[in-house]
Image (tube, rainbow, N blue to C red; front, side, top):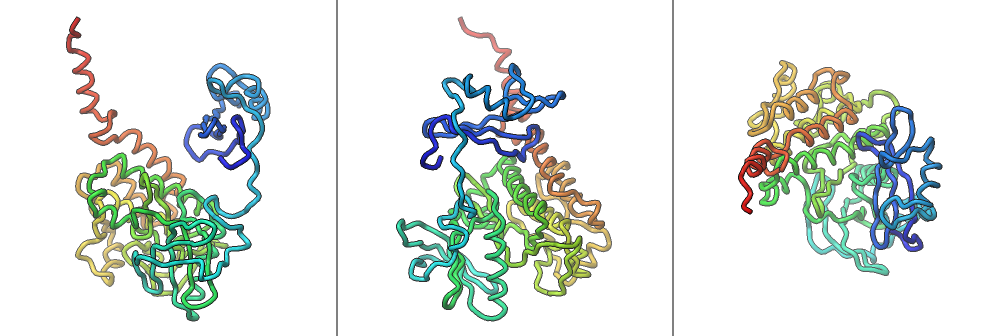
Length: 386
């Protein structure tokens, strides 16, 4: 959609959805049209069932002469964005540092152990609303600031919080990010809007988190603090994973930390007992997060103190399913809570599981639900008035 791309401008991108490898995106007037590119048993590419191609280049050339949709011919590749910043970033990657005077804090949104988060404005060429995380400057928090901003600069995905700028001159430090209008997932689930969410919407939220975590997984990054309070919600219930203060890149299979600062009820047993974190540790945490989602914000392990948790888990105990949670969804939680990390699914496995649940476990409001289908069939049986 950037300036200079005219109708017919196109790009091919890899797809992380099940069933097709690539997607073709084409500029059409003021919108972008997206087409799935499939591959058949003969490894031929196609966007429909009439025209097949040995490679993507041949497919592109064909649709330059024949419309891929009514009145839409491919013309030239989309202009390449030379910036290496995130897609939401307003400044180049090598110019993250901005002067403090450009930012105005307005309303406090929340606080943590070392930081506070405000709604505010970035006052530059345009005055835009942003989220501003302030971190008091000392030796410990300086390491936290560097670590969190490093991750936000390095990792870019639609379901990860986007960094706009930083301010490391003066006290406190500022981390400036996109503002998600509905706040954190935990309070959202407990609020009026969260109370009205049906099963489809809850599974969509879970699926978005899995997409973001799968991206971290393939980049060998452990979040170590995956919980509903650290997922932010925006317009149309878009989810973004946030708070990378505890995140680490794993060079070996296991990252070892002796820090006692950990979210106990979201942390895997091997990390609680031995400080050992792997990519499968976040899978355990996702199981707890899925419990939060399906229970619409209930506290995990109600009535159980942190000091009792490890003993409780080592006896093979697990949380019971939330009220109205199906056996299939609860099984996903239990798979995440396997004692042996190697037996837990990967986030790629979870992507498939959540997609299948979304397809085959429709809510009562969905037209796919058996009750709705029965209602529809009954209507068909009624005689039509002439």
